[in-house]
Image 1 (cartoon, rainbow, N blue to C red):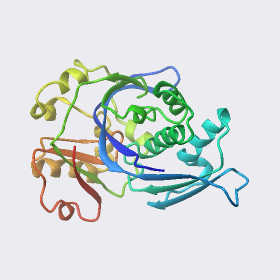
Image 2 (cartoon, rainbow, N blue to C red):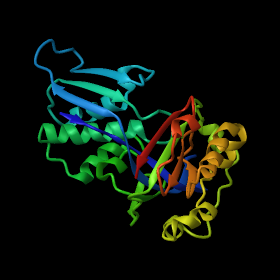
Image 3 (cartoon, rainbow, N blue to C red):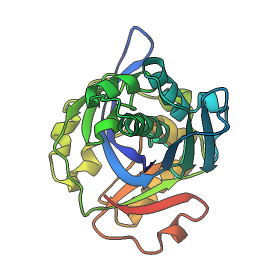
Image 4 (cartoon, helix red, strand yellow):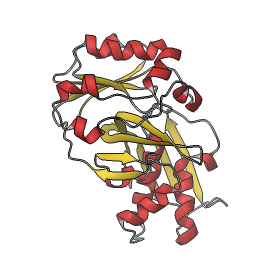
Length: 275
């Protein structure tokens, strides 16, 4: 059984308050995009490993042990409550890591959805979201995989009417890793005058002046190369451009396809997709 976990972008991101537990409450919109990994899950019948699973990662190979991979952690969560047979998992990584795109969270959520379907576990969307909550704040988003206004630490979802169909997106990720410390370095914690759903209900042409990502100030001051990507998006005719999450990827939304986009961002991960 093969599935294709997709990425997401953050459209707007406000850091609204610091919590007693040291985390921060956010307001953002998660929007699914057509950039995908691939996962194949098969039942193992011969040469069963002692751990009960076999994992192979191809494409952009990840650092770390298999036990740390979110796909394996998702499998182990379900194995605590269900008598699952040994499985082989092949994960092809195409979504870049450390990009603010939720690739690992999506892989985990799709693993849970696939195991639920493949082995008839009978889990509802809400139950699968509960499992995903244990794996990451944005992980539950990928169960229903529809645009949401996210609050809390990015784990409380509110439906939002939003449709960017027929718009073009250019997504670029430089070879830069942005740490959480760097992202929060210059953030000014405050509630915005208007919430994102209200701002995003206005024509997209207004977003450039109203919809912000609070992490950009910190990240752009430390990594001007990322700021330059956003500026170039606007030079190429973007209606709206922003860093996704805490970076380091930047996306631009366009009315029409951008010609020679790979040449414009040579040496970086660059993809153009219809939204």
